[in-house]
Image (cartoon, rainbow, N blue to C red):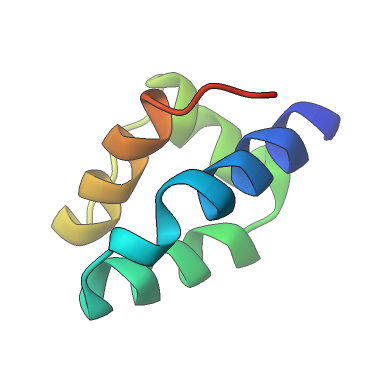
Amino acid sequence: MLEMDLLLGSFLEERFSSLTPAQAEAFVVLADMEDLELWPLVNGSVQCQDPVQAEVVAMLHDVRVK
């Protein structure tokens, strides 16, 4: 999904370097998900069960896609 690719790419550029090691690991897990699994987490229709992944998803909401 192009939207997810753009969002994740922008996140990498803007925020990844400031993540804690646990958040960076959670981002990798999220980025490895299929778009159809990740999109509901990002759009809020499904809640993250993992609290660190939820932190990263919340950060994804603040990213501006270029």
